[in-house]
Length: 295
Image (cartoon, rainbow, N blue to C red; front, top):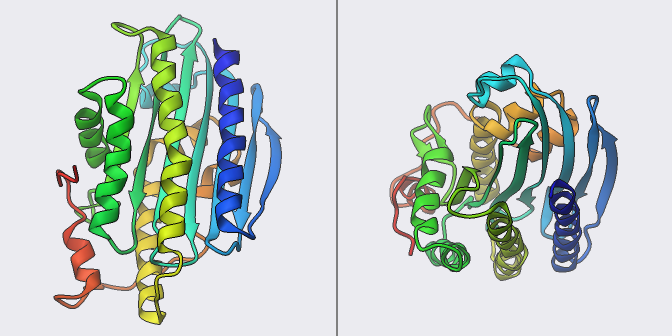
């Protein structure tokens, strides 16, 4: 099963890269193949200075090894075992502050003691929250979830709200999406869970390329670019301080350049910045909260 899943994830990486390149128009992905010190490896693909994407990555990995003590603590494991982990991870940072940042991850984890599970999700981080776009984005995710279980969307939407939250800022990273982890075979088989994870992965390209095309020509100026850099700073704070995927990669001795691909090409931190009332920036901050019923 692990070979089937890893092969599919490689194909998903190919499909998404093709869709992003086609929509961007000029940007092309550059690929680095790498090997993991304990077994396996991956393909890191990065696109830079395109018409729409300033810096983005679509990474595939399939690595294996023995769980370290740090990894056992992070994953609440009681016994040491060999592991196999494979997945696709995506982050896109855009030229225009009117086109949102997006993240997706789909992954499979298997241990030699017989335990296996899936994780993943998609979330959107607009520099400026366009409410119609947020509603449309969530509807696409709900449509996918509803095909597999009526409880998936509300459960995974709340999980995303809780996970993509910056406690020290008391704000969500963006408008959320769906997030799930430790989906194990019980009422559903591994094969059935895999079908759901595949559907999530295949929701990414048509959803994001629509938002790229829709918003790429919206006007902006220096004020909006400044705000974009500040929002990128928030994104970097979450990924470096709170994101479990970043910690997992570093704890397992993963490839640093691939792990930190998620960071934006340029960001800013301004002391005690507070937008003026009744501005688009203030409106965006008012919507970075948990529990907003987008659909």
